[in-house]
Image (tube, rainbow, N blue to C red):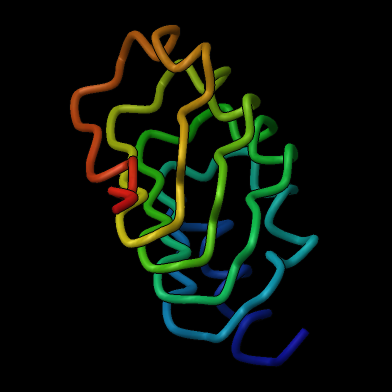
Length: 118
């Protein structure tokens, strides 16, 4: 893990906000899942193929942005984040949503989730 990413994780531990946009990440750093007080996570514009099931450990998350990756699905564990208010997953290759998405009762904003297939 690069020094820049390590510093971002340290800062996120204090602020509750982590932005790792445009870092060409193909996987998310293991240290991310230890940030239990994280409220905002932005992993946009990377090269992520999937969001690990560990996302379910981030129970304080209110905003999750994963726009502009190569995601084909969202993990069902995302639907256990009861405090999630904003979910943005535009510009991906999503073909379906997790069946339990309706359990996100705090969700206020759901942005561009399904890609149109022509």
